[in-house]
Amino acid sequence: MEETFIYIADLAGTIIFAVTGAIKGISRKLDLLGVVVLSCTVGVGGGIFRDCVTGALPAAALRNEIYLLLCILTALSVFCFAGKVSSSRAAPLIIYLDAVGLGVFTAIGCAKALALGLPPVTVVLAGVITACGGGVVRDIFVSSIPAVLKSDFYATASLFGGILYLILVRFSFSVFTIFLCVSLFVTALRLLAYRYKVQLPKSETKIPSK
Image (cartoon, rainbow, N blue to C red; front, side, top):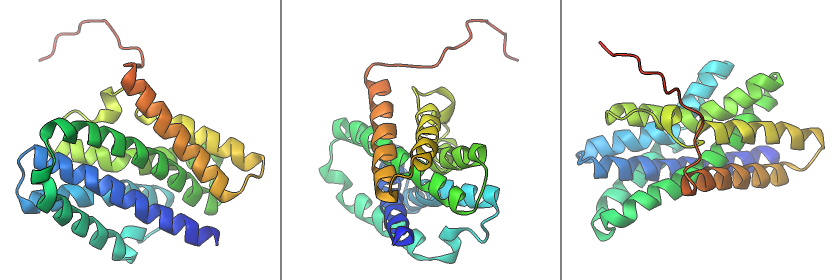
């Protein structure tokens, strides 16, 4: 039952992130193939990185074709209906969907690492990698500084979510309760940080670049 729930949540998270990748691709004027590639990258990239780090190989997205098929179908759907969404609505849509995907994938990454019997630090790391890995590659593909390196509580929100996951597991909450709490916590933290422009401290030291 728990494995089925995690699998369904994983597919849902894949679709959510695939949508953000497709929208980002369209906003950067990529062609159909570029939109599909970006959608797949965001949808399954984090999971592939996680599986490589934790040794769960071949990666789930490569063992089960449903992940890539969902990303491709999502990209095609977004590409076809993109004309009906104005650019002013696209940017906020990416932010909200990205926040939801961040929460869902943080919980999934932690759950899969915990199922492998990995230590607490690795469990949290797996959550962060799953949630942020695809977005890093997406930003690199479109020549942007990855959000995880500069954005307001992006990876930090995932990190706190991973810690919360371990705490809730310690108190023996059900898998559904843990998923719901962690997903909502990370999503809310990400959106609140975005809304109030909360950021980690940055160095004011000026170092000349070559």
